[in-house]
Image 1 (tube, helix red, strand yellow):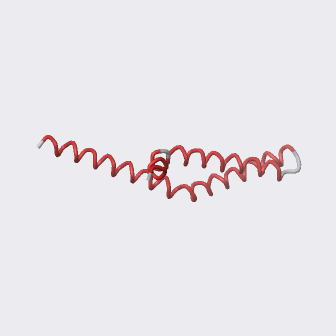
Image 2 (image 1 turned 180 degrees about the vertical axis):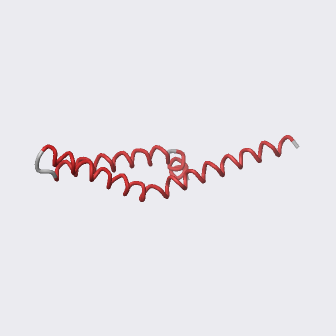
Image 3 (image 1 turned 90 degrees about the horizontal axis):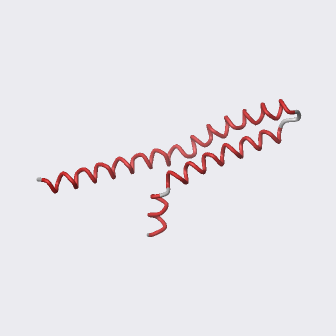
Length: 86
C-alpha cells in the first residue's frame, strides 16, 4: 500500500526520468552506429528522433493516466470544499 502511493506521488518524476533516459540511450546508440563524425552525428540525431517517438508511444499512456488522476483529485477536492460551505 505504501509503495503504490509513493509510485502515484512520484509518477511525474518517474516518467520524466524515463523519457530522458530513452533519449540518452537513443543518442548513444546512434552515435556508435556511425562510421565518421558526421555519420555518427546523423545517426545519433535519427535514433534520438526514433527514441523520442518510441518514448511518446510507451509513456503516453502513463502521462494521460497522470493527467486524469490530477483532474479527478481536483474535482474531488473542489466538491469536498463546496460541500462544507452549504
